[in-house]
Image (cartoon, rainbow, N blue to C red; front, side):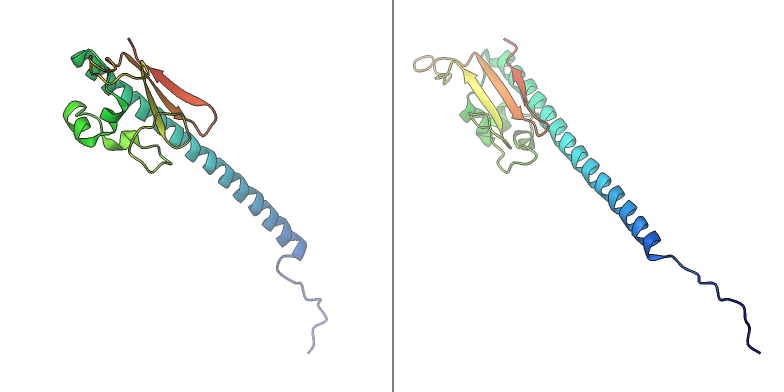
Length: 151
């Protein structure tokens, strides 16, 4: 016997599937954009932490020696291991940078360390002692993060 009942189809229509695909695409886009913002903020927070650690070590050095180190001093790993024992080399490296050294000019992906007066070399006979500094990190979120000597 042949049944005259109409067969009911089971499944989704193409329109329903397209709607689901569009919704999933929108949600995926939001997740990607949000994740990118979180990563950028995390790197900016790491930059601020690094600059604060550097400032702390520079102030300790100044309290013990009565002057701030030159850029060449800070960039010398041997000098740092003797005079700034609590400072990790990673603190000199921007999260997106490759060098574990400071620069003398503000730029993206590096930390800048500028001592004052401009020609100081901590030799009283030549350029004199370094009496101040400015530490700078360029933030991905816009702007710069600046810390200056406390003296």
